[in-house]
Image (cartoon, rainbow, N blue to C red; front, side, top):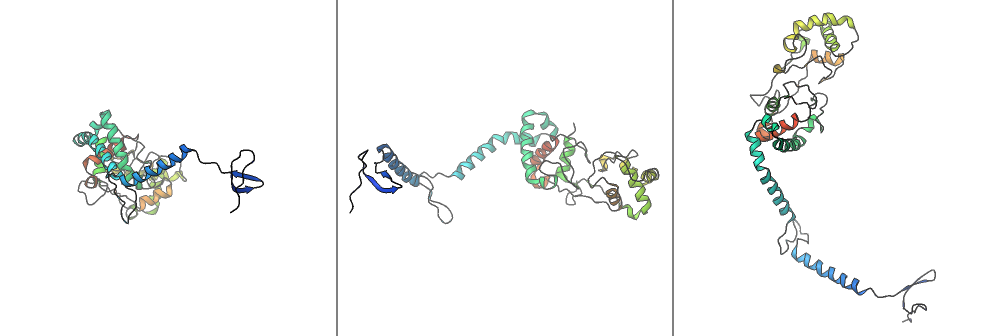
Length: 288
């Protein structure tokens, strides 16, 4: 065994490691550090005994204290549910309009409705409720069936053209390809398009107005402002569910596309439907 090298300056032996003429001193670790290290070992052993630690096939060792993080979460959720219990009872027993008039209830209902919207409604209406082609924007002031709290609740609860619910909203635009010829369809489409923007052939507008009066005014009104009680949209604005171009309007007049919204009352319950109605109404387009 070779003799240990002693550093000439410090008088401390070296470890034998050397690099580029530099040697490492073999100083002992500080006692406080050594005892701290031993303490961490003891603490780790105690933790393994007291708390769940060792993974098993389908679970882990339970620990003598019986602690469970999932159990803690369940307690927290249960406490939160208990705290909200009184509010949910009030929401259940009041109308949506009364809920919105109560500042505290409104906050709770809108928050709960927002959570329900993210789970059940964003697939069609989008995460920001702005909709897309075929799915209405819930942020604007245009409502096919009305934007008052009770009207929104009715729509959410019973759906639109949902055949499994007897109280569903129902409207059906006929396919005018079976009623009007191609020229008349082009004329009425030009007239409708002219109500919210320029058209390619202005000569079609006047005869199109006549076609509209004879075939469309019964549902959309003489002024084409629509009739909410029938679910007939306003044709004078720039909001279109299936496209605003003349070509899109022609397609809709020929063979109308209609959407189906499910009834949520049976799925979510009356309280959740009221919360959803409060949330949708609070998006900015709701009416008093």
